[in-house]
Length: 269
Image 1: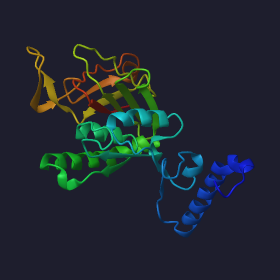
Image 2 (image 1 turned 120 degrees about the vertical axis):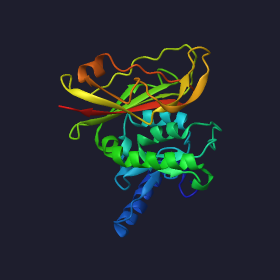
Image 3 (image 1 turned 45 degrees about the horizontal axis):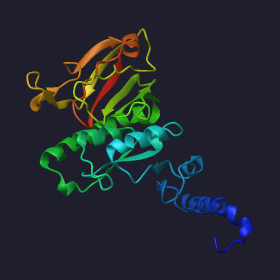
Image 4 (image 1 turned 90 degrees about the vertical axis):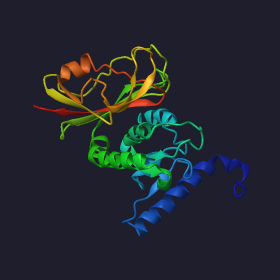
């Protein structure tokens, strides 16, 4: 900084941060009913100091769903999902040029403070219908993600191309579990998806939400679109014990790059 002598150049970043806090303090004081969101880039901070003034922070300008798995997984080591701004953005992504399904982008954004970052006018009627259903689901499931206990089931830094997350709300006795595959290798078997934080003796209903519409032709190996939902477990829901979910887990069959699946887990007793 030109305003400081060489002996004080090491103070520049600290002085800057203090100045940002002063500005935010004044904004919150003057406009107590305004919900502010800070930015990891624009404010240069994603920390507890910024969260004192804003309940959520823009996690990254990289909104590519596959990249966000790594970004949000790492951020969750320190900060809860409720403070991570996580948007469904347009494809191809503006930074990676990757294509991903609306379902995949939704499920990644679901584990955060979901928003939309795309031009609704460019969506097809089917995409608009799907998006409407996804937003209804988000409003229903957000309390679980924002107020529940968060578990990292599969670590994408240790198992490249794989990621799985879970949130469980003890008072609601309901959980949300999602699994993601960023790169598919034919013939590869995925590990079983094991839950955490459940009561071993309790019975749970496991219901798949947003089922796939793609299946593998067992004679040719070709992926084919299906008119009916394709469920991971062969049916929409099953009832199983907490001990089974945590120790044996669920078989998972993801079939292409960017495939994903999600389950709502509800305690029955």
